[in-house]
Image 1 (cartoon, rainbow, N blue to C red):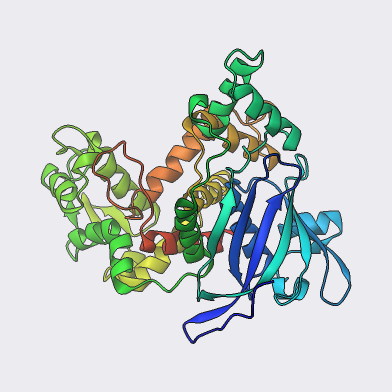
Image 2 (cartoon, rainbow, N blue to C red; image 1 turned 90 degrees about the vertical axis):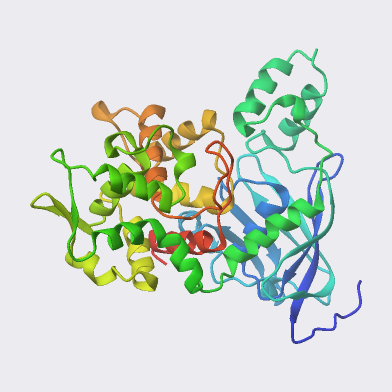
Length: 421
């Protein structure tokens, strides 16, 4: 057992944990430092990041707590109620384990595949406030939905041998499940530095700071730009009801959107980013058409100066789509963006369609939601979010991007509203 940690004003008491997945050979494990105040849902998300899980399934914690009481804790809370177990929210790790004494608990993820993780206390530690750290580990985490330890062992075996009778089938499944070619699969891969970057990002989501004025201005910038252009007089529209070419061109230049759309970008009907922005701001009831002009609505006049009032209005608007189907897809997409876990395009539409079907949505005739309908809803939500400046600007349209700190804080606020928090 390690010696008692010396906590400074800049640090907080922490647990030094060794977490291993049972029945994996070679063993998949991580050594993690987490704050003593961490609760069960937060600990779940740390384990998800540490092993590369995608948070698609239920989870549970089994242990005998510090008072000697057996505990079976399940998350999310709705599932716990259905199963008659203790809900995860409100449970703090310090109730279950003493950082100064040896002890263990079991964390199970995906009750179908039954990935059981043994969590051992190695001793007390200290951490900078608002952080989580990985100090060791081995082997990449299993592939989601691989069929438990036996299924994953078989996947490793087959993908290591191109002449294996199951190679083609499992290579195809692996690419479908991960979006990566089977030739890149390395079960021994483990990059502690990359994991700590993910944990840094996760910590910002778990314990976010309030948005700064600069972050607020960056996120709301496209909407504020259009409200500012409308001003007190409004914007004259073309006979067909579009923004005039000069305004479209100025929008693309001022907002730095030239990479997002090819061509001259001077006709709104042929410049989708500007068209979507204008239509979305109208959908949010900040602008309206009146006598051939685009003018501020009463709500638009209240938030035309931007800042936190506009930020809060937009967060509420994004979290309150007009129909339940879009609200469900928005919840899924926001989660993916925050977790950095958007599935590959081959898998994404199927995942959304399955989620919608499970939640009771059907198309005409009572049939399950098809992937093409899911694709349409996904595109609607992404275009809506692209009317805000949530991501680090791309250098080219096809480049993967990451959320800015402001974008992350905005989506966390949206997520809280979607979840009713």
